[in-house]
Picture 1 (cartoon, rainbow, N blue to C red):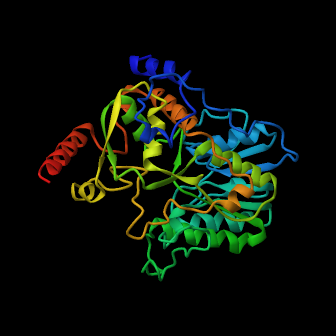
Picture 2 (picture 1 turned 180 degrees about the horizontal axis):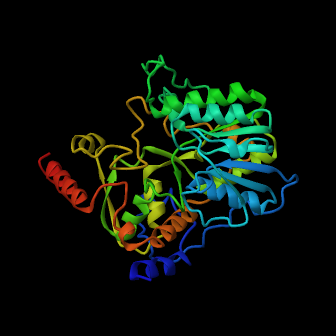
Picture 3 (picture 1 turned 30 degrees about the vertical axis):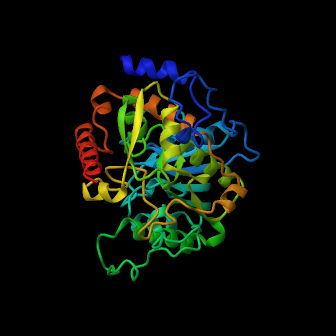
Length: 390
């Protein structure tokens, strides 16, 4: 175990919970005194009132294993269908059917389930059409994992499912096009599922950025890892831009519980309920590390002109302007009323870092998101020179 992981594990045994809002203005340095450990999440594994037979299309990537683990802990019978190429060691006691979403669903023929969960990350409506039409008479409910990207307009405040989604016309795409933009493809897939199963038997989730242990994209992981490294951290904007993301475990648990309840309809899946300012996010992450770090907030336009783009080189962050005013300002009243809950930022950060340090040294050193250390220093130097020049 390397020194950085030992340091992190020692700290997370005592670090956690009380983060956020007040720290940004308090001037209190992270790690100066221990705080309480992250609270236990309210969803405790316990038997479901009704055992279900659940078919999961996929199930071995990022979000699938969390769904499987929670479903099994609640007493459900789970079947996985995939190509049998990814994480084949997982869940040795679970039935696994092999096939291909694109052209071979024969392993599903003649079988029945209470619910099918479609986790496909691809933007291929034809996959949904094949599976939904095959299963519509043998499954009670189709649960489709869509995306916040289906919204054609995120300028509304607050955002709700009433906001318009992409169509061929609004996306300016020919219906005969072979390749479709991601948001349009997911919007079309939603409707395909509803057409096959009917609105009363279709449950659609529209998650935003899904984060937490197991995420190989590193889009959230960048921030805990960067802050854990310490030193001067480039922080985007002025700290007030809102953030709404979702821990993969919160999403997986809620999806299973919604299936148990026989729910239908369309729901957004982001959190927390009250958007978290970017400053609160970064200071909250810092409270879980041992690092001696400081934040230098850099103007949005300066960053964009320097080639550091929101949600790309600077992941998670998206300025609330230029048509994205509602991007992280979702009204989650319907979702919370249906049982969606949010674990602490300290819990998510600790679990994300633990997952990161479990990876190979090569993978730890090659994050797939965020700005490099060299480029970060360069932009910070340019920012200081710009400020000195007035």
